Image (cartoon, rainbow, N blue to C red):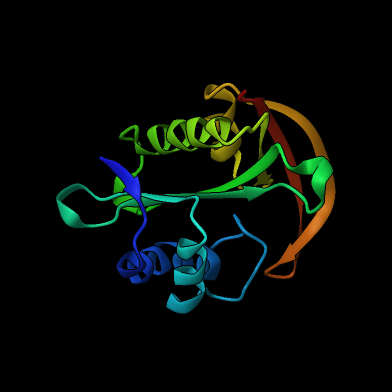
Length: 157
């Protein structure tokens, strides 16, 4: 069900991600992802998809939380699903998969940065064992509004 992303998955990942970028404040960027950017990310590893029937319905990608050797064991993830894939356990499965992969790399902590515009995302992470460890007030701006960023963490290894 879950597999490493391939370069030919880039357009499907972009389609899922760009809806979120374009239409919501779940992420604070307004720069849509190109297939080439996503292909570069896929080439670096740490990007996984679920593709029942061959169609990508969700993805997770993770990387080091911050640069520098002191953060080498701390990771942050991005997880997005196609609208029709929500509520089926796919997000939970992708998250657990990435946590196991990161732990196998020596990861100690996984971080989720969740917009205040996404209370369902915060509840999802809490249900998956994450603890809210901080809030950065009015740190992101999109659609002429300020949004908080909630930081949630989970010890994975």
